[in-house]
Amino acid sequence: MTPDEALRLIRANETEHVELKQSLKLLAQGIEALCAFANKDGGTVFFGVRHDCSIMGVSIGENTLENIANEITQNTNPQLYPVIEVVRIDSKKVVAMTVVKSTDENVATAYSIPYVRVGNTNQRIKVNTLEEFLKQRGLFVASRETESIPATRQVARTFAQELSCPANWGMRLVGFPGETFDVLAMFRRNLIYVACVGNDSEPVPDAELENFLSRVEQVRCEMAVFLLPRGTAIEDVASRLQKVLRAGEVRIDKQIELACLKRDSRYIFVSSSAPDIRTKLGFCLRYYGQNVGGVPFRLPGSQGFTFNYSMLAP
Image (cartoon, rainbow, N blue to C red; front, side, top):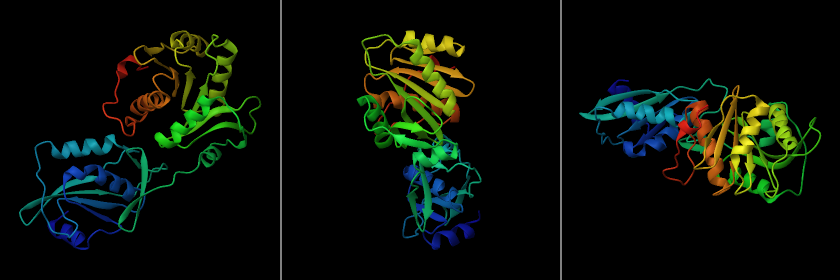
């Protein structure tokens, strides 16, 4: 991009195709704008330009552009690869990041949230309801239960309200006789099935494990969680699931009470609900995002949310 081309875009102020940012400290907002552009008709984000279109410039270090590129690819899904340029305007350096309209069948997200450009604003896309998502996969909701164990309602509420994943509990699907699905949720266009064990006074029977695995296969979910009550040892359940699946080595992190099995491209977690459901679901989502899409899930409102991935790597 030449200085004249950049000036022409900047002087038109913020439009459906242009976003102006004063500083690289606002990179996260710029990434949201790139996502919005990708989901519309493409566009350019300029850093080092005030909203009144005056040029103030930015400081560019040896690794600045590399760090910007890494931040973008790590926090967009599908990953965005914009053209990143340094344009000199009146002896000042402006960073221009340009992205074209995405051709991926999946909606682009920034920090796990989809945006679209509307005028000169970036608007969150109202993600399809879970029911619509299921229909796209050939799964149809027949009915909903009105009662369930408290854990299922809490899991669905945590997915929807705290992890920004559309979810519902007690769903009965057409063509699936028997009990309802405790919780079904959508994460980055992937289907998650969570089975909640309500009785912590007795060992989990083999029939319940087999039913869980059967349903995992039937709905073709990408990720499943077998959620045990607090204080329940996960090692026994994980090893028994491993035998039924004939899966490879089961990986267990005893410190956070989480186990992971992998069969084909499907990830199955065994976890207790301690210390709380939000944290445990966040661990599962982060691990899944890290290993499948290369983009770890960021638990909203949490800092330092990490654990040793190598303990669980299949």
